[in-house]
Amino acid sequence: MKRLVVTVACLVLLSLIGIVVDGLRDDVQMSDVGVVLGSKAMPDGTPSDRLRARLDKAAELYRQGMFKHIIVSGGTGIEGVNEAQVMAAYLADRQSIPRAAIFLDEHGNTTEATALNTAAMMKANGLKSALVVTQFFHVSRSRYALRRAGIEKVGSVHATYFEARDLYSLAREIVALPAYWIGVR
Image: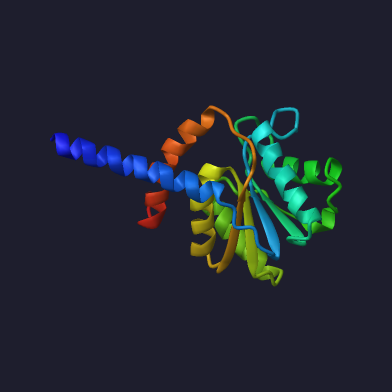
């Protein structure tokens, strides 16, 4: 029994290390589109600090010419505010990104939904490559979901924002990432 506990603990630790290392190792490459995954939007229609960090990173990369379009993906959270609309408004109003460069996925309630919706939008617009922008702990699963949805070339970059909640999110990814690998919905 002791060996089993030690083995499981080692697997969990290795998984944590793998997710952290993969998420912090940015793979920034020229892409057709940047894909910003949603996070909490505040009831007043502003992005949370975490979401703002993702949007700021996407705006920075857009200005550097890393992609010509940005897909913002998010649904309506418990706050009653649509994340994609908040994200688009922030990019246009606060970051001066042209509205024509921003595509909204207002139904990206999950990572999988974002991946499927993004793949459909990209196909409809003749776009082939994506650069996913999210928190470090979410990079591996997001990139995998986009590839599984049919996007072959997917790079990634993490938003530079860390908070205590990331520990919970890391623990969730230890379960969520393998669930994606085996096809659990």
